[in-house]
Length: 290
Image (cartoon, rainbow, N blue to C red; front, side, top):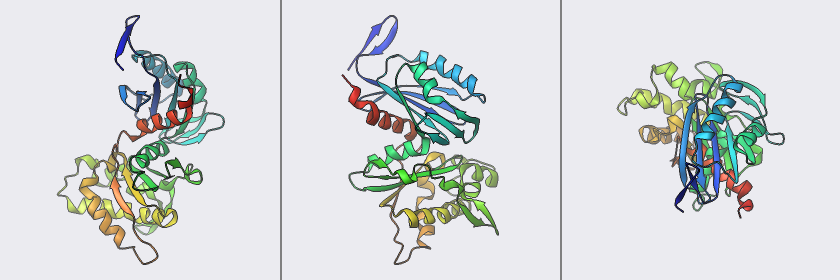
């Protein structure tokens, strides 16, 4: 549907959904049509203090071309109290017990649901392969490591609060959290550069990265038994550099009782969260369309 002019602003005559991806460094706003088309985005630096974030969010929502949403979803990088609409802990942000649902509802003037960011990314990515794979394990390898099981297009509730990046594994002779030696932050600490800056020809670096991902991933595969593993996140966006090596490392642990599923790259490794926001908002508020 074509946009129309109203009071000097560009507005859309179709149903719109608001997506808010709160990141440790950047926050991304997205406006989606009911068909899932991302019509507009606005990005801003995530302030350290929550009251500053709330002010910035209000300013940037006001910049959007539409100010009428049927509903929306906020992605949180941490633990969620879904019943009360509260962000309990925000991972890389020093926020605790934040009533973010009610705050965003006031700012956006629409009903809002909240969810963990890795869960939302997994929801979107699993639905992209749902015709082929019913039970998907989504893993995001970015600043930290997160993941979720999506079964028949729905987030599996027993895994929705799992923190797989915090599994304790033996590494270099001591117990460490998986994400402490296999995440994007760990890659920078070890090699002095981001995954995006490591050349595809650096076989030593990619061997170490693949091995460190594999030792944790095989445990998650063994306990969740997925049909497919989808790798996303900032490091996951470079899957073409290490995917084959990762599969080689995983095969070391394969046995007759532990068969490996298909391992694939996410379709939108760095944007899946905001698309997942749309999926959940549409699931929650789609029946409110007129």
